Amino acid sequence: MYPEPKFLPAGDLAVSVELGDEISREVNARVLALEYLIQQKALPGVLETVPTFRSLLVYYDPSSVGYEALVAALRALVPQARPDVLPPARTVEIPCCYGGELGFELEAAAAKVDLAPEEAMRLHSGADYYVFFVGFTPGLPYMTGMPERLTIPRLETPRTRTPAGSVGIGGSQCSIYPVESPGGFWVLGRTPLRLYDPTAADPILLRAGDHVRFRRIDRQEFDAIAEAVARGTYQVKIEEGRR
Amino acid sequence: MNGFVVVQCGALTTVQDLGRPGYLRYGIPPSGPLDRASFLLANRLVGNADSAAALECTLMGPWLEMRGESVIAVTGADVPVTVNGREVPRWTSLPVSPGDVVKLGVARRGLRAYVAFRGGIDVPLALGSRATYLRGTLGGFQGRQFRDGDQMDLLPPAEGIEPVRARRVRPEMIPSWQDEVEVRVVLGPQAERFTRAGIDAFLGEPYEMTTDSDRMGARLQGPAITHSRGHDLVSDGIPLGGIQVVGDGQPIILLVDRQSTGGYTKLATVCSFDIGKVGQTKPRQRLRFKSLTVPEAHTLLRQEFKRLQEALL
Image (cartoon, rainbow over all chains, first blue to last red; front, top):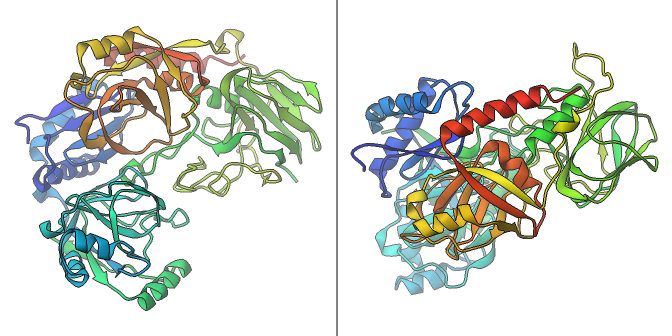
């Protein structure tokens, strides 16, 4: 974490507030706290904010607030941006069907890290994941919390198509593909939930600061949940109020 | 009956409005027109609010058959426009009648034309906006580009808006798209991650637009821009106009359908009032970059706002 925040101009409509240079829960919590304070105080001229690992991109309207005034207001907020100002976090349960045709790289990934597939599943589904931020494409969570034992090099040749809902691991990270896309992660399983659903009123499932737990399901339950999701009747299990 | 039928969809025609703010933090870009000035002048010519939904038409087409009385206007790229085979002027309001066939040809200069209709196009709001986000199949007409045979409805003109009268854009306000354009940038957010020679090359030499460019980003080709400490970065937010320089030293300007975050260093950011120039530059045409301070950019932004306020006759 930097002793003083850096304010980096990002054109005529945005400024990047950088709090550090590392990927850590501590710095990220301060970024989320800064964003939360900006929302709470409805900081004049701020149009939208994009939190990432260690910085907050602040979009503003220069006809409402000047650059210097905005930077001064943000600078004054940074010391107050402590993790304890944040509201309690949510824990979102992601049902996941491991192995088989949906988790088509479970066995290869387990072999690569010298584990039995069952043990890899147990480790992966037993962990508590934390969402640093959502970005790059709609609904894609950048998560930490994967057991170190599952650290694995990314695929040497990225796949051109990874099905939506795929749960993958690469490096020390775990991610979930919201839409079909190329990918360099090993696919351990698939969730029937939609992390991005353009037809829904609230199209994005996960948010920055959420905790994620995977729940093991079999193929039969996967199909049943997928059907309920398609009908719009599935209730995602979300536990509120976690400190 | 109102609206129109898409007889031929053209190369890439989408419904846009001024965009979908507020969702970048979920990874959803704002979308909206690439050439915002041309877009809102088209709306003003037909008496609409700036935010009404209109068409962005890329390179060629579409052909439209009107189903009702309306007033339309075509702005943006220099594209031949005919109504029932007769060439009509752009940058002016045009009354049209049921059965009229409006055809846009191939863009001679510039790349993106805008067609506004009195009342605006009636597609459902998605997250508060009618703008099409193609990669996310969100907004616009079924989240996609036009196909032959699509039918569009128009909204009734808003209550209280002035009755339409013949309007046109001041001749001196009509852009003439050049083979080489000057694009103003603010250096940063990561200019210190580049060598002096790299920044000098970027500001001193022209860069060519490549065919591998779209509403998400414009890939340019020119002298390599050298990094001082590698091209990787802890991923952070990408502003509109952010210029990423990837490993080979070539710049990519991120545009309205951009990824919200990324892990490449960003040398500079194109000023909002010059994004339209980037969007109107065809492959093999050139861009030259000029660096401004933030206060200089804000002064020009105010001037541009005023210029647009006074653009119509």
